[in-house]
Length: 289
Image (cartoon, rainbow, N blue to C red; front, side, top):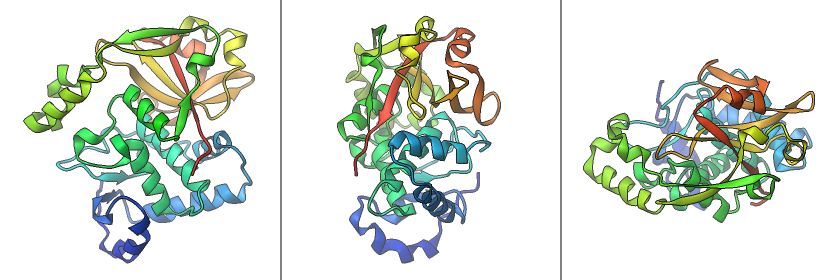
């Protein structure tokens, strides 16, 4: 991936004064990032959309076919990475939320998008190194719920169950995370994980995803988190709901198909074939700033 620091964007520095980050903390993928984001926001506003879910679905459609690329956030230093041309499952969903929030804000521009993205991606809503990134989805949910970015619907859906897990996958698999070779970063993540020891969260067991009273509680544009039985990990994949012929499918950045797709199988059939996944959590974007 080509990573370009655009000195010409310093002319926009004054626009960042109302936001929490300096422009030098932003890493752009290419020269056209800001133009593409502004165009997407303009198109969404012209589409006369009304709800956050409608915006989420609109932007997801615009990103169909975008290449799947993993590890786009990684590097020697943590930056607020803006890249809508290469997405993994998490950056895809974060991008949709940030676009939705920016489009519904009073200042629907690319720098509003950047501010929303930082607020969604980092602990406390502010970038402060690798360990400030919300690596675990449970922590991402807790943080973003507290800031009004979205809320969790899972517990209100019929047949919801609870599970308790200790989240320690990252430090238990230190060699899989280059940043954790740094003892300071490792210690920071280790300390963060202690806050999610014996963490309880709701989920819908995959056996119940065919039930009518579960399906009727899902909406196009809802965020879906695939829960996993992997030790030390809570969620292994993200996407959003897209109904096809009355059945909920996952619209997601697929590591198998190597692009953003609407999965050909509905959620029940999809998870039936994924042995390591146990069910789903359901999130819904809120109308706020």
